[in-house]
Amino acid sequence: MIPKDHPRYRSLVARERLARCAREGIVALEGLAAHGRGEAFDYLIGEKTTGSAALAERTAAAMLLAARHAVISVNGNTAALAAAEIAALQRASGADVEVNLFHRTEERIERINRLLTEHGVRVLTGTPERIVPLSHDRALCLPQGIGDADVVLVPLEDGDRCAALREMGKTVITVDLNPLSRTARTANLTIVDEVTRALPAITAACASLEPGEGERLIASLDNTYLLRAAIDEMRERLSHALE
Ligand code: PTJ
Image 1 (tube, helix red, strand yellow):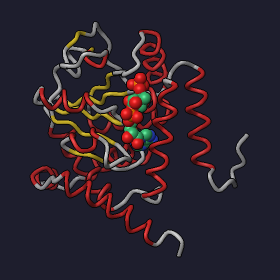
Image 2: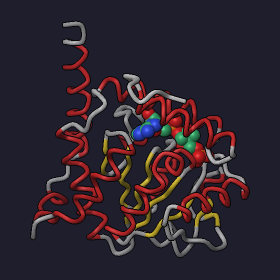
Image 3: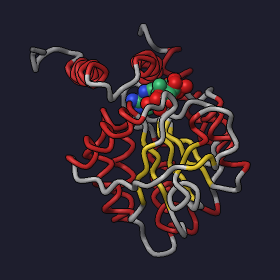
Image 4: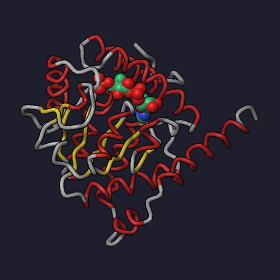
């Protein structure tokens, strides 16, 4: 039992949930290591949504709403941390949700589908095909889902799929606390924020974009600027860390 007044309460609850989901076969054991990396970067940005992340989240909302067919691609970590937040974003954006795993087994796919469904997500199901040009199982996706999408939101991505999706001509939005990752640098739009803060912020933006704002945000999107801003924020915080 984690005491509510513990200074690291939120972080400990997230860890406990991931550990439980790992025991239940929802989160891959490798996902626990991935979370630790994310936590370290979250420390560096001050465990808050920065101004540049908020801009990225608004831009993501605009891109999801403007898409012909937007799909949110969900892995084990994202499902464990943010199932209810995915449901809310699906309602606000009209995006489809598809489970796509790096450490893929049919059993994990089923467990994650069930967890998402229990939280109100309408999950796309069907027979996956090797559509994404990759040699591992992330190539497998649904022809009527990621296969057909023009915009794909891929939170906590593992690297090479982002490039493969871009090669297919898709627009890729990612959520990644590490602004140096391959995914962060390859995506069209990178939100450097913790996934449980980022998804509700995109959901809120879906309901509050002013007329014409979405087009302006998309036209002025500059991912290198957003990544630099995140790195500047970290550098600034580090240089005053012990004051
Ligand atoms: O469930 P599976 O089988 O699809 O596997 C999922 C993992 C996460 C294991 C897989 O995609 C993976 O190995 O990912 P990586 O390469 O570790 O990349 C994950 C990225 O997400 C890293 O750059 C982390 O810094 C970042 N990250 C981790 N936790 C969070 C995060 N970013 C935002 N919010 C988080 N909570």
